[in-house]
Amino acid sequence: MAAPGGPARRAGVNSLGLGGTNAHVIVEEAPVVEPVAEPAGDRRPLHLLPLSARSPRALDAAAARLADGLRPAGAPLGDVAWTLQTGRRAFPHRAFVVAADRDQAIAALTDGPHGAATGAGTGGGAPPDPAFLFPGQGGQHVGMARDLYEHEPVFRAEIDHCAELALPALGLDLRDVLYPRGPARDRTAEQAMASMRIAQPALFAVEYALARLWRSWGVRPGVVAGHSLGAYAAATIAGVLEVADALHLVLERGRLLESLPDGAMLAVPLPERELLPRLGDRLSIAAINGPAQCVVAGHALDVAALRRRLATDGVDGRVLRISAAAHSFLVEPVVAEFERAVARVRLTPPSLPWVSDRTGALVTAEQACDPAYWGAHLRHTVRFSDALATLLGRPETGPLLEIGPGRTLGTLARRHPAADAGRLVLPSLPHPSEADGGARAMLTAAWLWQTGVEIDWPALHDGEPRRRTPLPTYPFERRPFRLDPPAAPPPLQAVRSAPEPEPQPDPEPEPARPETEAGMDGTRRVVAHAFATVLGMDGIGPHDDFFELGGDSLVAAQALAMIREATGRALTARALFRAPTVARLARLLDTEHLDTERLDTERLDTERPAS
Image 1 (cartoon, rainbow, N blue to C red):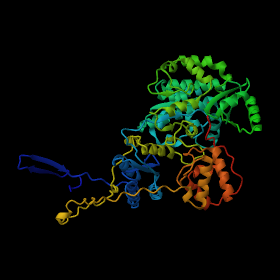
Image 2 (cartoon, rainbow, N blue to C red):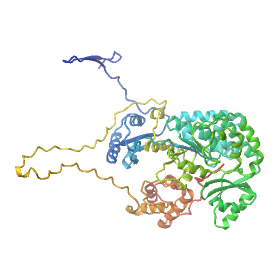
Image 3 (cartoon, one colour):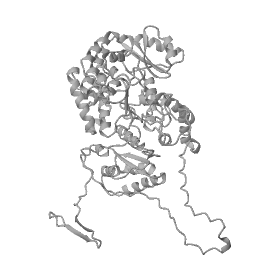
Image 4 (cartoon, one colour):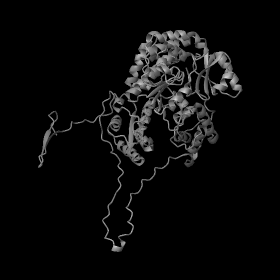
């Protein structure tokens, strides 16, 4: 080794082959790498550790090896993640762990990482690109995507840009509404977020910034669709609008809707044909989100009267957190003014497929560039159920990725008649009642990678100094293939006998089927039975996520009621958001002292289709 501060040592290796092959190579000693602690400026509090193997058995062994390798103090967890992401080949069987520190990573690897996918990235080419779904107003809340704003430079830069663009028109900084500091500012921000004029640009900014973040990570949409207000973010990502023009239209839209008479919107679990005769002339169907999921809009008093009439018939209508009757006859006085605003901005044909929530079909170049299309979009019914039918019917549509707060559109997609069981539907951001914060986007990236979607791993660490670190190697499944010595020549009369079959290696055992309700006992079985009953499916496993299987706040209440009846213990709906799997909810029931008060009726609004 060279002296400290001295020149690196080098050597020449010469090889002269007898046949005339001459080679010479110069080698130099490796640079000294000083051990470092976890960087103090690490911007991201969570790290994604991907694992892959050629078989389920090898994947389990890889997880166990990595857990053992992390137990001694060593390289920062960020360097471990970097090494696994950029230094290992991805095989078909994949799993992952998202953790904040080594202890969390070891615990997750020991308990079993998120389940393995078979055949990811195989089968003759890359999987289809995801579909980006942009929700409308209703799921917005103060603090949405705060963790991403604090830790992801791409997301923060886009939010800052939108806030600066909106400042002259709004007279306030959107960042003060989205990410206030202190209880007093929180209350002021909540009041501002209730305004159409402010809530709509705030939601657009978050959706646009989130889409840009996904694209920076290498996740690019193959098709886009939006629900009402979400159509503006979809059009921007599709190249129809520049972000400044889109934000200008969103600001105009919010201003015009807020200028209308007091309105309200009501979600009604009835099909269009049964709902229309109940409306009369003073109410409109604002949205059709599924075969039996509609939204009614009109004057607040008329909406309240309809809700009472529906209740007498046993139909539970839910008032949405929207103060204007968008997509109703009340919008007609402002349609012409909005079309004039659209005519003043530059519109270009879509650069990628964009499914219309107005018609349910792909948006044509003529429609995208026609102000009348945008005026009709503001006034007429949102036909998102038709848009989902188009999306789900396209063979080139990949996983569905919701680009906004909550799971509203994902839940609608899972319940749609055209949805297939194998379709991956993922949220990007948590509902405000969920406790995973910024982990959701990282988890979603991992689920996408698990199904074969390529992630740009270096971009995930852009701006962070990372280095490779030694980690446990691949767990090769070695099997002997012994060649026995030849036997003595057989007697002459045996030459014509049938040859002995050649020895064959033992077949690899089939992987064990995951534990389901039938194989559980105690509290787990009670929870699994409740999940299976309300979701209408069999084979619920201990690690199946209630919400990822299509659950929402309504069926959650039914499941918790069944659990309370069977165990005598009451859980709030918030507890199910904290512990959404069978195993975690059962553990919560078994280990915590739970009150037996009535089921918390807090509103989770996980299914808020909006304007």
